[in-house]
Length: 131
Image (cartoon, rainbow, N blue to C red; front, side, top):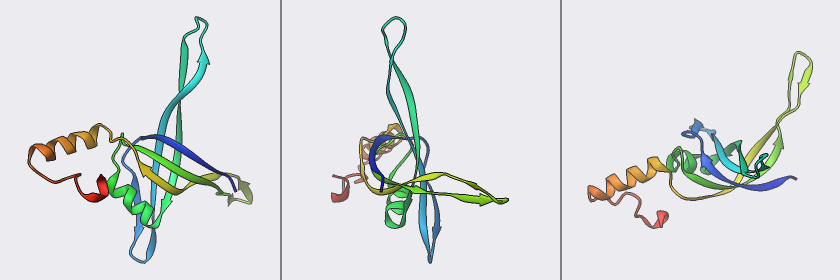
């Protein structure tokens, strides 16, 4: 089985589907910049890497409720086949399935919410779970 870790910022608000008796599924994309060599003048270049992830069950629920666009996530994932047949032709593909995750640094949206809540005397973001 192929496994890996990826750390990046959430591209846009995660999407949650399912619920009730169906398993909840959350879709989100992480972005990060990585070194891509040097240009002709010797200056470092970067390229943007984007990976779409899928989380299920309680992980899906937590990510969709607690994560905003711009937040950093550290994801442990496995690669799973996602092959489909259409008109007798098999299209081979794969999915990055979240096995574990950890919250990283908050993004601009969450920092703004935290600052606003703190200014209003709210306990937002100060529970045991967020420390």
